[in-house]
Length: 307
Image (cartoon, rainbow, N blue to C red; front, side):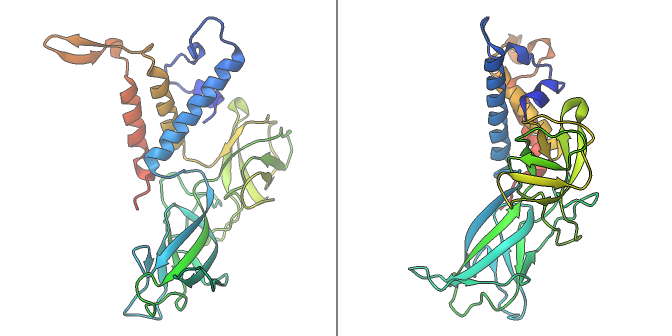
């Protein structure tokens, strides 16, 4: 969420009065709105028990164990690793060693011996997950690398993977007709889908009347700042700070609802009075901060990490 998107949304909150005071400058107001957006984003992550924006993570798993399933009755069958964050877009690498101290004997598992167990299908030729909250957090591993020879938790696996919805912001302006974007995070934008074979994510440039959809063909970095190369030229010019995202609109709406809850905590928009015979009600039909927060949590139900 950005201050521009927040103030454009139909919330009924008077954002121009935040922060309160008669000598508030435009810079102070923008800064506080940015803080509210950051707090709302943190609440979204808290509800989902993980950040939804694409990240590159390294996870260490002991196995066989709860997150490393190794079949006893079929040694030739593949293993399944259950990672912590989802949806898994791409597995960058896996290495394994005996689960002893000091750690030594790390062996890199060759590419092609692992894959996402429930690869993201994507939509419209995109590797980005759909808005339905689909995708998995499992990885299928070829047999022979982890077994029961050393007993339960006898091996240690280190998995590096990409998960989530690609999401970034422009670090430099981009003119009409440009085919490259300078962004603050390339994570997930140029992976190749294991299910469909598509390369690159389709996302939206959120820039008011200049809003447009772009498809990324390649990225200069796996993660972090870099350059995204587009499949087609931009139709409009865009300024630094503009958000480019594949996140579902429902997630953005939940962030807006949390922002409303934060803004209304000061009590300037709604009050609660007592009615005879003592039932609490909000005057003027106004919503309370808790109402907005509960609605946001409900919207995010399908995106919460389960295990």
